[in-house]
Image (cartoon, rainbow, N blue to C red; front, side):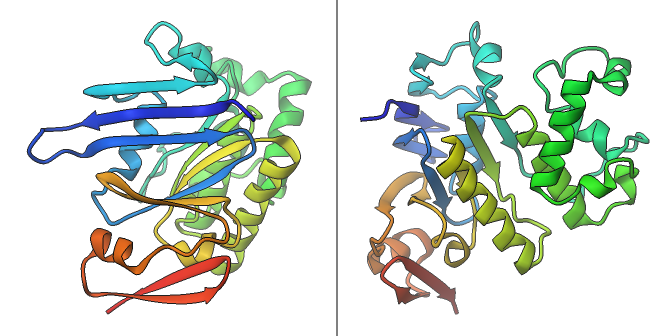
Length: 262
């Protein structure tokens, strides 16, 4: 049995009368692709912030790569993590090229800014490869500010991939992408899991779009209401617990379940 890349044990966060996370336990193994779904304010992004150490749980325990996540080892452990956080209508005002944005994801990203512009040939090859993954290598010298929202999102994903992480944390990575690019993205993530053993924890709203690619779906609204493995349909009462009685559930096939709001 594979050792967990992430292990969350009884995580609590927020006021006791209205917790953001309430007794959340999850494990993610090497090569496993997990989608996390739930309504706005369910605590999905908070979980990713917990895993990166940006937020500390009020109680509970977090292990990364078999080690207890602490302040003293956080920087070392994060070298093995690629993180695409949620950004809306954000673009830097600095005149940075696409290659410079991606370079910020390299392991030595904390070095002085001017050194990013003199990457070694090895680093340059890693930047090109990451951009090739997201089909943006032809724009490597383009001013990032001149890109469309979808193009900028793909460059941000390349920044998360450039360090060749063992774990990817993705917060709505398909934002600003059209349906064709979304499916290419999910297929790429599936390939990373299968061929490179990357573990992925991805927050998404559209469960119908992801269930053909992920290994499991965790249904979150403060607590984990259900954790469905591939091929398992999520019970209708789980959707009602998370979204309310107005939810209609439509089963597409034995490995996928979708939903529609009135």
